[in-house]
Length: 386
Image 1 (cartoon, rainbow, N blue to C red):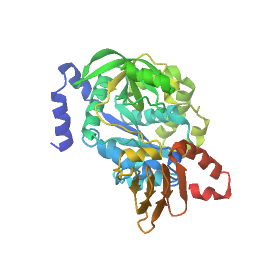
Image 2: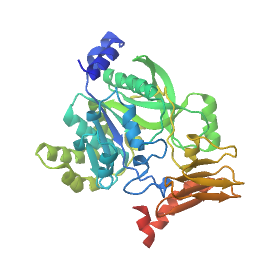
Image 3: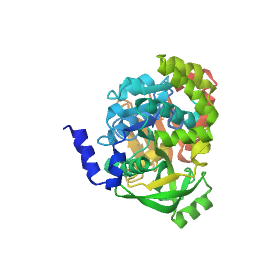
Image 4: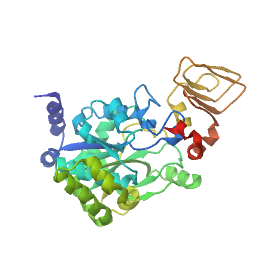
C-alpha cells in the first residue's frame, strides 16, 4: 500500500460511517493562476507575474501553493488554469505538474469562465469527482491547517450538493476584501463545523468593515471554493446557462479528439466575462462555509511584503543588497545582489529594482501602481511590462 492510500485510509477512519462511502469520490484541485500581478510591477511582468515569482518565500508562490496540498491531493490531480503567455513558465516553476492539466486561456474571461472550464475538464476525468478552486498566490504558512480545513470542505461537498467556501477569520476592518456572513451550523464534517452562509457582501468602506469586525460573524472571502461536479454543473446550468452551453462546444470538441488549444482559441473569446461570485455564488442558496484553521494573506500589493520579513530598528524591510541612512519604514526589494540600493533621509517608500526598471513609490500610493502600468503600456516603454 502506497503512502497516498495509507493517508487516505487514515482519513476515512475518522469520518462518520455514513460519509465513508461518499469520501471515496475522486478529488481534484484546480488552481487559478492567470493574473498579471500588476501591483507588483516592475518585478511582476506579463510573462512571469506575481504567482510565478518568490515575492514571499524562496519558491514561486504557485509552487508553494502546490506544495501545501501534499498529502491531500497528489500533483497529478492538480489542474492549473493560466493564460497562454504564462503556460510555459508555469511548467518551469512546477515541473511536477501534468502538462496536459496546465491550461492556457487565450484571453481572460474572469472567474466564472474559469470555473466552467475547470468543471468541463474535471468532469471528463470523473463525473463523480469533487474539486477545489483555489487562488495561486496567497501566503499560508500553516499547510497542515489548510489541508485540515479543505478536508472538512471536501467532506461536506461529498455528503451533500453544496457549494463550500472558506471564511478567513477577520483580524482587522479591511476594506480590500469581500465578506461572508456566517449563518447557522450545518454539522460537523471531518472534525470541523460547517455553517450555512447568510450572505456575501462586497468590499465595504471602513465604517462598515469595522461593524463587521465588531459583529463577529463576518469573515473575509478568500475566493476558495469546493464542490462536486454535479453540484456546480447544476448551478452553472441554472445561473449561467449561456456560458455553460458555450462551454459544451469545447467539451464536444475534446470528445472528438480536437486539441484544447485550438478549441479555446475558437470558443473562449465568445464567453461572457463575469466573476463566479456575481454569476453563481451570490445567487445560490446552498452555500456553506468552513472557518479557516490557518493563517492567510493574499499579499495584494508591495506593502504586504513587510508582514512576512523582519524589519530593522527603524522599521525598514529589505530584501536584497541595500544600505540605508536616516531612513525609516521603507521597503526595498532587489534580487540582484550585485546591485546596491541606497536610501538616505527618506521614509515610507517602496523601492523595487530589476534589471531594466526601478520603481520608487510612497507606500500610500501602492494601489496606483496598477494605473502606472496601464500608462506605461500605452507608450514605447511597454517592453518593460513583458
